[in-house]
Image 1 (cartoon, rainbow, N blue to C red):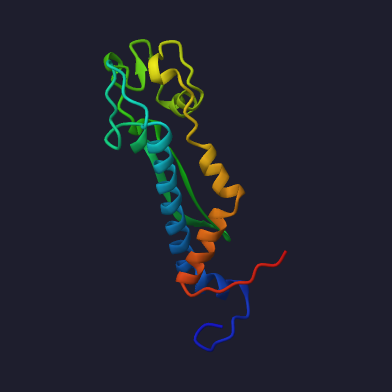
Image 2 (tube, helix red, strand yellow; image 1 turned 45 degrees about the vertical axis):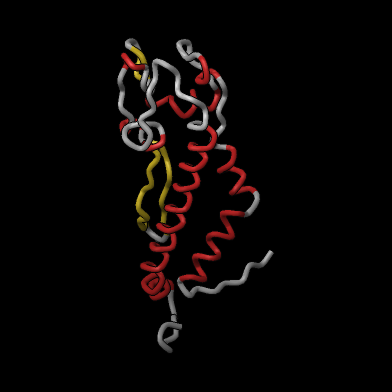
Length: 163
């Protein structure tokens, strides 16, 4: 019930909650993006740079390529996402930043970093650096659910879980 007026159909319900739900989804996506970046910092950037390589961090590096999509409605669904934008990474082949003189690897960087593979990778780059499993774990262990529940509460929306 909104301001004492009963909600009698889906259209009224969607109109009442659409702005709040978009804000909640945006805040959840911001939180998730922060978690991904923290995992990249801890599991990828914690290894020293090689002598031929300089990390670019949030300014053209792997860390800065992680982005969020602002929440949007599509029919009766609201969606947002966190993902990597390969084009946000600088390609400097001479410095082996996201490729080499023969190959642009920006689209493959997440897999290459996670697996530690690549024919011209050496040193610390050859060590698998799993930055994604901690994010999957947050989904599996319910951490993401708790954040979502807290965001609902912050916005004055109470709900009851039933199993």
